[in-house]
Structures are given as C-alpha cells and as structure tokens.
Image (cartoon, rainbow, N blue to C red; front, top):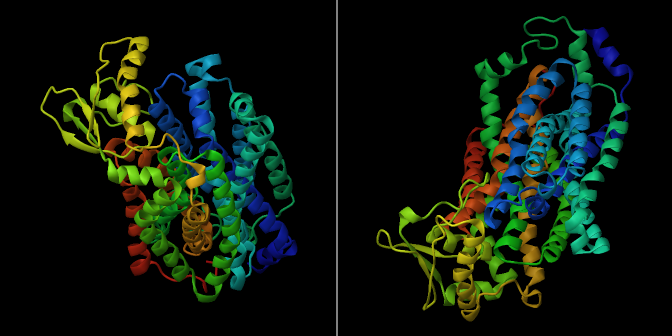
Length: 556
C-alpha cells in the first residue's frame, strides 16, 4: 500500500497543467455545443431543406438534443474505461472522437447536394459527438478534483466549470467575426463551415496538453493495490455502481438534487434565452448575440467565485442559491424580457389578442422533427403561421368540421385547408391565408421584427445576466460536489451518468421541447414550465436530502 502511494506521488504534475488541460478540453466541448446550437437555423436550412419552416427549425433543435441524448451512453462506455484503465486514457479517446466528429460536420454535403444522405450524415456526426462528450466532462472534472488539495478543491474545480462560458464566448465571437468579415450571405452559404473546421485547433491544444499529464494519483494508488472485493480497480463497475443500493442511491441523489436543475438553469440561461429573443421576440441575431457575449464574459468570473465560496461555506448553500434565483426568475423574467426586447409586440399582444378558432380534431401539435406531418389542415396552417411569426394566441374550440379562422383583435381572417394538394399547390393555398393574416397583424400593431431603436438593451442585458448569475452559482461548485459523493473506484461512471442524463436529456432537449410547447399552446411563456419543474425538483431534493461534502476526503 505504501509503495503504491509513493509511486503515485513520485511524479505529480503542476496543478496549472492539470487545470489547464482539463479546462481546455471542457472549453472545446462547450464550443462545439454552442456553435451547433447557435447555428440551428443555418443547420436547418442546409440539412433539412425538405421540411416546412417550423418543422425544419425544430428538427435542427432536436438534432442538437440528439447529441446530448447519447451522452449517457458515452458516460457508461467511457466511465467504465476511466474506472478500469484510467482517467487519462478515457479522456484522450473521447476528446479525439469529439474533435473528429465536429471537424467532419464542416465537410459534410448539404441536403441540396446529397439529399437525405446529408441529413443522415449530420445525425451520425452528432451521435458520435454526443457519445464522446459523455466521457469528456467526467474526465476533466475528476482529473482536477483528484489532483487538488482538499481545501481548494471547489476553487480549482470551478476553472473546469468556467471553461463552459469561455467556450460559449469563443463560439459567439467566432460566429460574429465570420458574419462580419464574410457578410451574412457568404456566411450562410459556406462560411458556417469554418466554425466547425476551426475546432481542430482546440482539439490539437487539448490533446497536446493532456499528453503531458500523468494519471490521477488516486487512480494510480488503486492500480497498485491488491484487487479484492473492496480494494483495487473495479472489474465490475456497472454492478458496483448500479447493482449495490448504497451506490445507486448516491447516483439517484446526484441526479435529482443537482443535475435536474443544472440541465434546466444552464441551458435556459445560455441557449433558450437566445431562442426566445430571436424566434419569439424577433430580435436581430447580431443584437442578441452581442448581449449574450457580454453576459458570458461578465458571468465567467462568477463561476470561480462560486467555487471559492463553496470551499468556505459549503457546496450546498451556493448551489441552492442558484436554483432559487432561477426558479423565481423564469416567468417574471421572461415577461420582462418581452417588454424590454420588443415593446411593440408586448403592447399589441394586450391591445389586440390573437385567437385561433378551430375544430380540435383538425389540429396537430406543431412538433415534427422527421417531417412526416404535413401541417396542411386549416388549423395547422393557421398555427404554423403564428408560431413562425412569434405571435402568442389563445385556442378556442369551434364546431366539428368548421374550417379554422383567427381573430386579430376584431379582425377575422379565414384559414384554408391544403389537404390532398401537391407541394406547389400547398404553397399557393397557404399564401391565400398568410397574406391577409400578415396585413391584420401589421394593422393591429404586431411588428414583423423588433425595432432595434426601441430595445431597452441595458434592461435586457440585466435580465439575461440574472440568469447567468443563477447558472454560475449552481454550476460553479456542482462538479466538485458530485465527485465528492462517490468512492474512487466507481467515481468516473457514477458521477458521469447522472450528470449526462440531467444535462443531456433534460438540458439538451430543453430548447426543442420548450419551443414545441410554445408552438403547440400558442403561449410564448408556456414552455417555461419545463425548466421550472426540473429546477423545483432539484431544489426540494437538495434542500432535504443532499449532504454537505466540502470537508470529505476523496480517498475512499
């Protein structure tokens, strides 16, 4: 035992290298995430050309979520690799996989060039990314925690967490730079590829730095121990993690007390806010992107502050503060964003509310990631138009068999059905409704897009920053808190799986789910129940069941 410990201590890398290598890989992960998410509309146009506008946009968001859906699978695969062969090996494999898939997206043919093959290829690339991502984060966070002294574990671990907003900032700057230099037309035509191809540089840096690191001292100690039921590297990671109730209970606790809220708060703050501003409020992407860059840059130091604070007063109170701010902010905050970002839309919604009268049997949910539903009924045509226009509406049932119509204030616009028509005929039929509907909306004061001169940018920035504060307080200490729950021999798997279920499934599918709820109900705020419910679940679970772990040793 003593010899193993001495061997593990013979070559300890500088903490700056450990933190830098881990943070660089994590920053690469978030760069990939935000490049794909921010370019959802471009991805939709390039790889899902055959879908209607609403379905195409949702398909792009769903594809964004698909990558995250495979993260738990990656966590299972590479968690076992990390617990069996070492943190360094798992980390290197996943970073290379992720980088290769991201780079490949920049080289793929578009739908116009290769048809459905292009759609399938981008889906495959996204699946590879998601699977690889399932192993990256756990390796980065655990590497830092298992090297760090106990008293500063939260502080040093927060640098891995800070790499998330840094990765987002780099992504936003890259998009803004290329749009400015190339122009919108050239960027949409081919310049978007450069965003994905540029990821090769981050990959090279991550691999170079990681190759210079040694294995985690705690894992090296495990390798040197006699392998028995309770000592040495685990040969049955899955059965020990999920087959033994004491360990499974910790996995469930980590998921419900931390990861549900993490997926909800972080992805609302840094992704759905932009979807809301651009899709619902019709704010110019350059304006929303600039505001988000400011929020990301200003909130980045708060992750380190949150990690440092968790070393002083505990992980639990800091994370609870983030959950409370997020839960309290969702509904009043987004209503305030509407008033600040598009005051004309807010006024029109009150002065001339829109109502859709339709036979409920004639209406389908405006959610179609694979493009099978054609949205050709009179109800579907009316709702699809309003969803694309970012206009809230109420639903009222009409007698069975009655064609749908909308009321904009006191103006009635009859919808039409295109069922049974060819694609060219459907376009002409939809125009028969959309032309007078647009005129009615304009007459009632509904703007086609937000007037940049009327946007209260300081207030909008402040509201966005509040969500950034919530994300920082929750996310800053989260990785360290989760790592401290689990024993060394199953730590990679046990920590990674609940994290990627929470982030991958709850967070990754947040944008597409919220947008689908909005388009289906007609209420641009209805989708906020999704993040609110998951945040509330973690708030209650953390408050009553999560232990404080800041003084724990990781050597168990």
